Amino acid sequence: MDFRLLIARRYLTGRRSFSLITKITGISVAGVAIGVAALIVVLSVMNGFFTFVRDMLVSLDPHVRVVSATPEGMEARDSLLVDIEGVPGVVSASAFVEGKALLAYERDEGFNKVVVVRGVDSERDQTLGSAVAATGFGTNNLSRVNGRPGVVLGRRLGERLVLTPAGGTREASRVSLLSAPALERSLTRVLGPPRVAAFEVRGLYELEAVYDESFVFVDLAEGQRMFRMGRKVHGIDVRLDDIERAGEVQATLRERLDPGQFTVLTWYDLQESLYAVMRLEKWGAMAVLALIIVVAAFNIVGSLTMIVVEKRRDIGVLRAMGVSAADIRKIFLADGLLIGLAGGGIGLALGLGLSLMQQRFQIVSMMGSDSFLIDAYPVSVQAPDVAAIALIAIALCVLASIYPATRASSIEPARAVAMEG
Image 1 (spheres, rainbow, N blue to C red):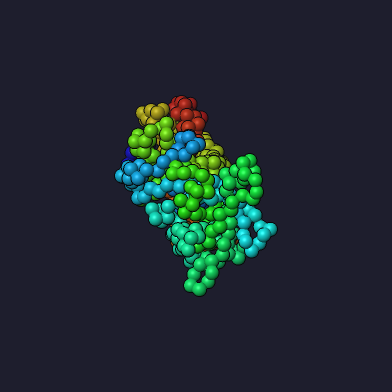
Image 2 (cartoon, rainbow, N blue to C red):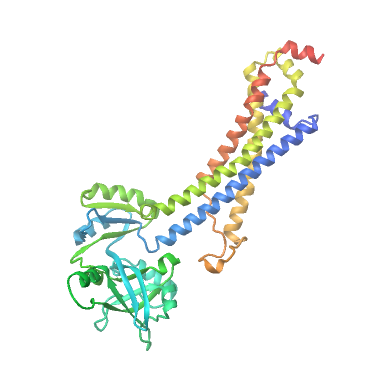
């Protein structure tokens, strides 16, 4: 073992060490351990919430979206869809139209609600089918049956209006949709009531209230008719085999498609404000909890300074024996490193243990979990975060030892030995 590391270890753990110094060092190690454990647990929970929200939103939102660079829309030619599906990592590409409409229920004449209507090609994209299948209420069949088109709504909206999808001998509920272009035309060009499109409820999906209460889905052709798009669409939704490849696929599509006609967005771009706030909260919590380690670092300054005072004669003897000032400095820097390694190691074990236990056994449940889609706090341990926390803890401990190390290296051998004598 290197003599500097050996001396540093004996200064911290030697049997004849001053009891107060030993206690302060132990408090420093405990402070570092608690700070590291708290950081790992809190960041893992925030990562869990981020992953949960992302997966929930992309259950209906695409991984990548190609939209028209102009408000008039674009033509979703088969060749364009085939070209997009040829990009490595792409599973499917389907066109969509989207706009606002007024929803009315024929059995409740007083109910009117502005919703976002999305026209989709359910044959090319099975995302809606999976969301409906998860609830077990109806199907995602949006095509015309007996001349009447279908619509899929959120479960909360369906339960509030007591809507029932078609099934067996049960008759499907019917709702009406009045698009903004139809309303504008009736008010500005044509006298008389506007033309209202009637739809049969074919299924119900369930996500969060922001979707369930506001988004309804119709067939792509019906959406084009409602919003007077002709053969044009607003964009193309792209699903990938791995959501982490969204950036790579975005870069490839930007190279292949004319930037003057198409804009390529990832799942992060579609909800950028929400994700940005969640990331800001994560790093803000990390900065606040890192103060625990900073406080522990101040204890390290105090304990090592006391060791320097106590071991002043020993340091003088070492200098007289030919140990350089740089080596003396390294001894006390090694003390800070050892405290950081000990505290960081204990904190890593504690934090990872608590996080993995919550992930596996869901020990801590969420208050008011009946209002959420999850029962316990989600946890997602990410290796880069764990590595960053460990490095920060060790770096702060080493930085805290710089002052004591500098003070120890400036001790003059003759004066230190003479004073002790």
